[in-house]
Length: 335
Image 1 (cartoon, one colour):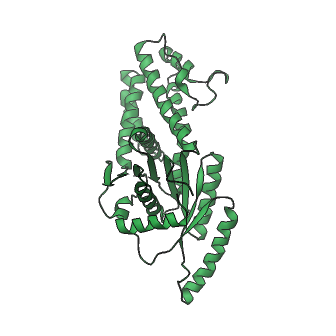
Image 2: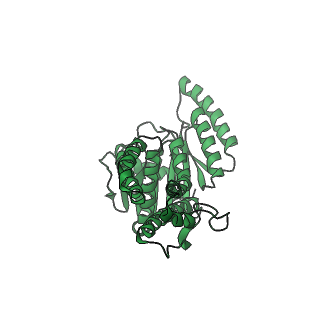
């Protein structure tokens, strides 16, 4: 499974299957190979600090040569995201609308999608910055459903920037901007993520030009993010699962979605397989059930690269344990 030569790797899966361990071990493996790695946790229930057994926060921190780590603070991201959007919306409207905008945006901060939208913008900017600072960015993502919503957001967010203008479509000053940002019977922009570089601002007043440029910059950002996430040569998605019924079902749904979204699934890591030397009547019964689940995995995910990692007798915590797991990943076929 070719991963360490990529620019972006996302590690996903059901909660509790070992995503953080695999993401951390892969980061160590790539760093040992001389790549400059940034390991980012987007899971609100961060585990990187627990895995490395040392403090990790919302600032990029080097923990060993070639490896930087970061835990994104979702609450801080939502606050900053709402503040940016509020300021942008105020620039589109008159002063007497400011109080209502602030009220609506405070309500938006509590909405289910606010965290995903804020995380997406942070991720998009991290990927932009990493172009010059790191060779590989590894994302330890939230449980599957959250991750899939996040991966589908670039299109929604790009379309949202157009929707912001439509809310004020009666404004004559903004009408010209709207003409430049919305499709004309499918002849100019057939999709909100099509490259907006050719949109013009010539002939518009300074305020309208500023609004247009802000929206174009936002569209370009999400356009680049979507392009990166779908680029099989540079991006890989890996799902971790255990040989149990619920993780298998959840991974099946995730794989279906990834295929539909044309996102580059590199393979699966089947974690915590009972080792051959495990014995006893209890484990014998467990092994018989596990065998059935492994056969299901073989059938359900035929044609998708897979590698297996055996269950260890102790927890995996701290640098030494993660380095040992990096060795296991390498021995299992991760390159």
